Image 1 (tube, rainbow, N blue to C red):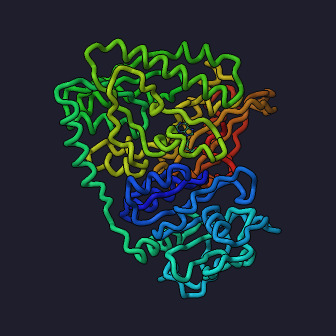
Image 2: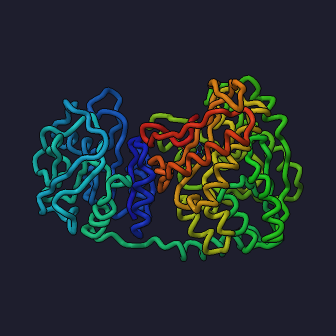
Length: 506
Ligand code: XMP
């Protein structure tokens, strides 16, 4: 296994995911806990992640010298590379050119990390500092026009460093570089999803016995997969509950029906829309919206949970990224937005938690979902954020604006499905803006809302490219929305990628 030490990069989770995809179990830990975690897990290698700080800044995260000197193979990425170099006597300085985006990497053909690659490869850079003088024992094996130490190795120790990010999709050769790190250092391939499922099934059966399990269903793929997973292991013992926040799309309301018809599971649909909408009334700040929704959700679910006497367990579709965040593992990272999902329920409920997907990433859950026979339309559903339509209505949330957005969104999604484009993109939706513009319908002047269409391609939601949907398709969707949705007289298409934008607008 490989321990990943997180210095606060937005991409640390991607490193863990990529390493697992290559068949090696990986865990993310903080720099402070690294010495203890190394003793506990006895990893075969370490990876130092990137991070937003400058290694020479006051208070910048660092690590015990004993970790750098522990003798295990180490791969430093971006900040990780700079930290290793600085701690070993090299020099890291502000670069005269900040390098952000794609760059052409040229390697000297002598490093095992670049085995099987062309001499020139496109890589993705995101740094303002660079290593300007290498410490003794290190040499550069690849560079770019802006950065001569873009990849370095130590002559005798198994220490490797990359200034670029091999974990993001914009570095097409990244998986090969990571795989070469694994092969060169002979790290055991010990991660198989099939074994994992079998182990979890046995564990849950033993843990639950004949007890009852309460389950929070959100409509998303994680909790839907969990419901079916548990239903197959302990049939008749789960009580699925879905909270109507008033911020769901029309299609989300169909979930209880689908579960009843397809799997014979009856879902309790708790309508709390009034509470949510009244607390959100007049609120326009995105973070405040997210906080109100998060707290209200917990409150409503808690009340509902306590109604079911005799229930001993609470099952949640918590994924690994939620676990890392709640453990404070990335307190070094800049806060972009407060994500909320059912993974955030309080542990003080009088139940034992069942979270079989705690160690998994979303794409791994989708593999399980397919294996256990979840309906393909549920497996392939685009992600939908916990705060729902609230973060897709910019400005104030009202019943009227929710109705406009629901209608427009349903048209966009229906057209994507009809044109067989839905499964080709990661996520598509509409955003209602607090902007009105002048239009003309028939002979009448209109002064109505602006609506944005958003569609992105992504592998994991961490980075995303706006989808190049056919122009005549966009024209058709725009015309349908303007004709059929009262209150919208102008439609625009969002052509921003992540980063620097995010997928959701709030
Ligand atoms: P952003 O907008 O941060 O979104 O680029 C990345 C992915 O996460 C989804 N998202 C959320 N999911 N709770 C969730 O469960 C949230 O609060 C939340 N906010 C964003 C978003 O839809 C995209 O797929």
